Picture (cartoon, rainbow, N blue to C red):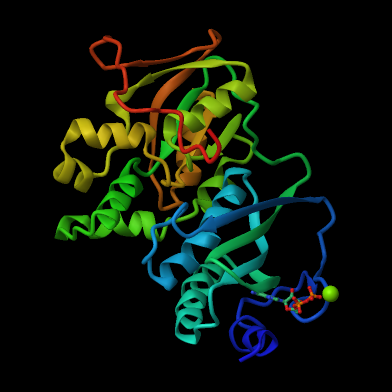
Length: 320
Ligand code: ADP
Ligand code: MG
């Protein structure tokens, strides 16, 4: 198939249709309608084989993951996802690979009513770039810069599972207990419903892609604040503790990355309201620290002693 046939076969008309898509795949560009009173949140991410995921990750996983990481940014802004564009660079037009890739991509698009409205196909080393757009009422988007001293710091679900899963995938070991960890890396769940629930409640929000420590540091820098974190309260994946031990599982939770959980700062007085909204969101949140006026990030244990991570906490760096 040539690229026009490939687009027709795999992408055109395969994603959810939306009334706000005036013109989708097939023209030079898409035409999209932004409802009155709404703003567009726009984000793009590239996944390169060997950099963002190990060679050999299944095409279905790559499809899911490439959309998930962009939708996670939309979630962190408190926006409702609407549209996506997909730029795909492939070594060859392998139809089996494309079938599996689109299954992963479109299943996630379906769940969040995301319309694929355009993209690009090119030949080259495997790389996937997804642009995602979300909608948010005027002025209601969550940003990194609003954290205030006294806010409590929360994270969603659990941390370190994806990094533990990546380690299993890289080392090609498949303990039964590791299945869920591998899935947490291969098919992260963008926390869309939680992001929406945080509108009007959270003062700041970020999604954890580089690692909890590195991403919380981004929030604190943007907000001109610091934090005290109790590392004993980090929600660890039970399987990571079982397979790697508590100390290592905690290191991965702290600095591992790839979790795509949300980390947010919120005045404690708003917790009851959040809990009420969370009734409908199948995703627990855990308080792990507090924002301070002093601009440093201190890690403590429950007994009050300082905790120092033994690995590099700066997160993944493409350019050192
Ligand atoms: P142009 O050359 O004008 O950029 P293309 O021939 O590359 O257009 O693409 C034709 C149409 O197919 C465009 O609407 C484009 O957005 C869409 N498209 C191309 N590749 C993809 C893809 N991987 N996924 C979704 N839509 C795609
Ligand atoms: Mg054109």
